[in-house]
Structure formats: structure tokens, C-alpha cells
Image 1 (cartoon, rainbow, N blue to C red):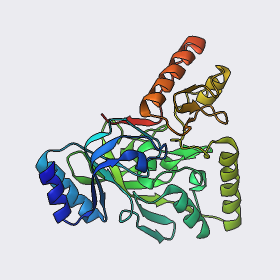
Image 2 (image 1 turned 45 degrees about the vertical axis):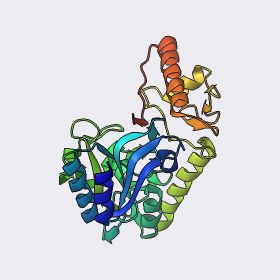
Image 3 (image 1 turned 120 degrees about the vertical axis):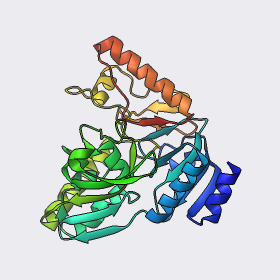
Image 4 (image 1 turned 90 degrees about the vertical axis):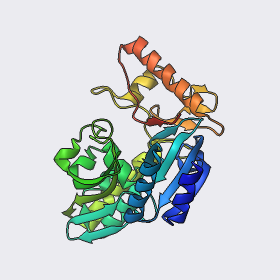
Length: 301
């Protein structure tokens, strides 16, 4: 690992940190250290980073702004690549938007709205980055990324980069091909939006923001929705009917505001959250004979 770090630093590809606590890089404020955390400052330097990682045969994975992630208390082995500054370019050409995977989703929705483009109103309250949103097919208010993505530049496990079309990304509810079938990371996306009336777009965005502010616990560190909705049922509704609102294990608590959120009340560990998730799954199965699955991605040792 020492030789790897030395080569990364000498390549001047961006920030390189050893034993970096990932609690600093997740919205839940939970997570042990990454052996090495790299923040490439350009797509070219991302390619160099991957070449070095492959040369040394080290495990790696990528993260964005750390929402929708639960990182193990033991951290992550190998290299964690964080997509952020340098991978957050934005170009608008008529109704076509080309945006870096590290660009914040909420910021993008706000910027695009000011230009009178419609299609991203649903994402105005979704934390995280564009890359993560494509990876998870993030959505809300009856829409999701599958409605706007034309194609995406994907970094695959072998270090290669390839453009995938909307159809090739195989979007479905909170799912894309990048999660299991062709594991990969969205480095850049081309979005196809529509011209709209600025005042109407702003009104819809504000309504969505107000709804999220009133119904979701953003006053505590959290990772967003913990469980996928087992349609036609809703996870939050099932958890609430099970009288689990406010139930806690250690520093992890089922939000009293929205039952499909687990919040970090101050000193929660990943183990606390995992135990709470297991308790919820068991309870829902016993009461309703319904299996619920996590939407949050659980990673690490």
C-alpha cells in the first residue's frame, strides 16, 4: 500500500489521504477508515488513478457525496475514489445538459431551473451527486433519473470507460445495471430536458422542497430512505403500523418524523444501524409476511 500511495502522490492526480475516516464523507456521519481516499481532480486524472490501482492489484470502490451509504465501522479495504471537485463540470446546450458525476443533485436542479429547463424538479430535495443518482436511479414525486438520462459515461471495475445509453443502463425502480449486472460508476451524464416556464418550474420545486422539509428528518444525520418500498405497500407506512417510530438501538433511531429514515442521534455506529435494520425486517415479516429490502447501500469490511 505504501508504494501505491507514493505513486498516487507523485502522479499529482488530486488529494490522496491514508486511513481517512469515512464518517467525514457520508451524510450519516458513520463509517470507519478507508485505507486510502483519493479525490481525482479531472477525468484524465481519474483514468491515471485507475491505471495505478490496477497496476498494484488493489481493491477499490467509488463514492460521491456519501448519501444513501452505510459504511462499516471497520471501514473499507483498498482505495476509495471520491467523485467531487474536478468531476463536477456543467455544460448546457439548449435542452441538453452534460454534467459531471460529482456535481451535487440539488445544486443542479437549482441551476437548471434558473435557465427555464424542466425535468429535474423531482431532484430538488434529493441529497447526493449526479453519479450516485444515476447509479441508484434516484427519484421522488413520481419521477426519476430514467426520465431524463440520455446516456452516461461509466467507469467499470476493470478501469475502462464506456458510454451507456438509457436503454443499456436498464433502469427500474431504484435500480440500474451498474449495481450488480455490470458494476460501474457514473463519471458523467448527458440529460435531455425540456423548455418550460421558469415560474411554474420554481413553484413545483419549492413545493417539493417544502414537502421534504416538513416530512423528513434533515435535522439529524441520515442516509435518506433506508428501505425500498415493497409496492403496492410503502415501507414507512408498514414500519409506522408496527409502532416502531422512535425505536432505537444504541445511537441509531427510527425517525419520529418519517418511519423510513434511520437517524444518527449523535453517537451511532454502523452496527447500531445494521441491528436496527434487522429488527425492522424481522418485525415486518412477522406482522405482515412482507420481505422488505434496503435501499441504502451497505459497504465496507
